[in-house]
Image (cartoon, rainbow, N blue to C red; front, side, top):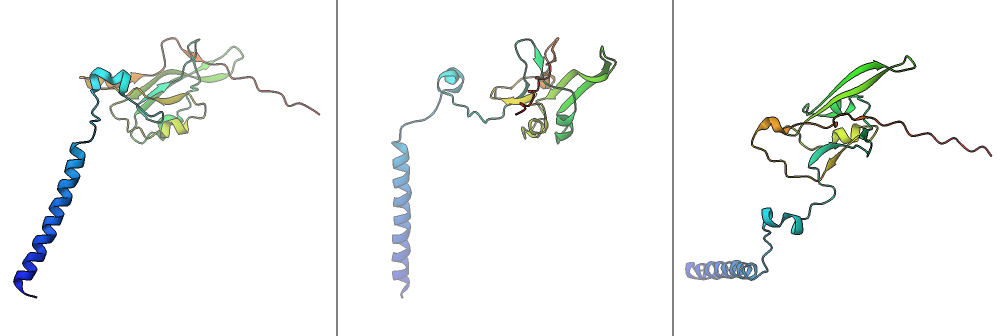
Length: 165
């Protein structure tokens, strides 16, 4: 095969490659635009999947009660010490000593959203919310206290007695 024939074949292949690239570019150019105007239209067009992990929150009911028993399993499961559970031991009316939650601190700035803490919680006291807008100008605002002011431990649900046949 002569040098000229090789040159022509290479020229033809490069022209085909160029035409394929231009074809793709032209198709993309005429597609409908999908850009969202984020800050302005975030409440109407923005879709966040339900399974998105954005920020840890402690679940409270209407009476400001939570299910956290201050066991510390979430704190131990966290790989980078994002969670700090402060508890104290109190004596109840019956004379039994019991652990009570004083403060549940969560450092959003160091959380890697792995969900190990949620999986470790035996009482389903914490979960991840979809609230993803967490940007702040000062780092100390990322240190959150998840238990609300004056919140108390929810009473344990009554166990159903087995029906004897």
